[in-house]
Length: 316
Ligand SMILES: NC(=O)c1ccc[n+]([C@@H]2O[C@H](COP(=O)([O-])OP(=O)(O)OC[C@H]3O[C@@H](n4cnc5c(N)ncnc54)[C@H](OP(=O)(O)O)[C@@H]3O)[C@@H](O)[C@H]2O)c1
Image (cartoon, rainbow, N blue to C red):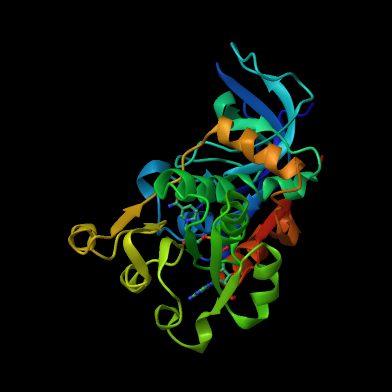
């Protein structure tokens, strides 16, 4: 095996063009870590924010860095003390979030607790689309919002990376699901299990939605205050973005506003894989790119119009 590999290296902050494929040393797995031969890595909006210098600068420190959190691949080496995996296992996971993940590469290392067995019915490209977005949806719905069967849930950007998992998971939980989307994506959102699609381009959603128990805010800013207005008493807005409305004021009005930040969980990834293999949850990959076209893939994600997920196919 060669001691070097191809990776997408980010030498500076900036536009997508700063992403360059370079030959770098293959990483070694430390104690408690697994090395994965990466077959696919998916792109999340946070990668775009890191690349352009808008997010996680403190966690990343000095450039150059290798972006990316989501991988699917095959275990290739084990560090000391790893008992749960063997060389040759197919795994997927969200690596090291919110520190430098280094997933846009031919090999990546990860703490064993950040990985789980890959869903059997998925290709690596499909499996790589899952971890960060599905874990976020899971934690926002079931931990942040404690969503229950029979409740009404409104999912913003229901066609997006997080949204398309959130619609399916809320439907699986037995909630009545509403999703905001533009008209061209309404059919897609209905097929995910939404009972009602709210066309956000036809006017303010808050004037056309009957009260709900739960809102997933994937958009931030003014969407938080507007979403608080559609809550039933006792309802909750779970946001993935910085707080822009006041949780205290919401509480005074008998509503709640809470921010959720995703964290790695092998246990939840295993439950998600079971749901996927049972046919109850399906990732949607709208575009794949080779590693060398990472900049093009970033441009697409940066458009904010992606349906489902965008994936880098690394080889294997
Ligand atoms: N806190 C955390 O841990 C965490 C975790 C994951 C993600 N996030 C953040 O959450 C946000 C969403 O992530 P994502 O991966 O789901 O993004 P994404 O996949 O890029 O979202 C794209 C989708 O947003 C829809 N959209 C855009 N504007 C909309 C609007 N005004 N109303 C309804 N839908 C709209 C688009 O559909 P149309 O073309 O129909 O508009 C598109 O399908 C990002 O800012 C991300 O950084 C935070």
